[in-house]
Length: 198
Image: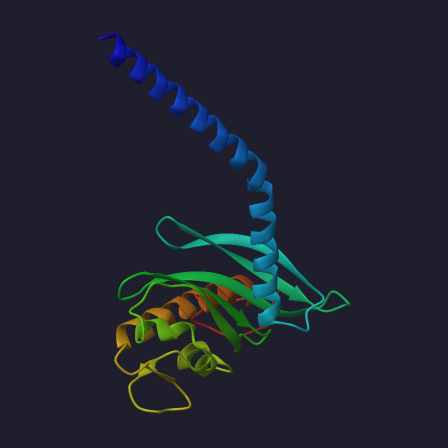
């Protein structure tokens, strides 16, 4: 009985010490992790609109239930908006796809960047490949339609991964609609394109 009590006490001490060490390590590394995440986010933003002198956070929205995304304004050295970026989420074949969507002041896509996905290796995970993401460049909201055959005015699906292609395109549409609704006067849910950005 005494041995059982001793073992239990020893285990309790080990658990308490382990918890204290983990808390100490976390407290020491958390600020560095957040700093690294901030730097990585800025790199991703800058990669979409490299000519921007500054990219400022402008607000947040919820593209999927429980998923908070943000949008940004990119400005030149004179403070003039030269583009807009929105993060977006969409449910893919086997994961939630997270992306960034960049548009110019006329709401034509500058480009997209897939930040996170867990789609089928060798098929759906090609949404992160340059060849697929380049298909979005220069497109307008009306052109964000997935097709299976080559069409420069639409988004050609990845062979064998139509669901992932459609999911990524849906996320891009969501982000672009948010930007249009926010920065194009008279736009309701991105359905009209009259006027210019605010």
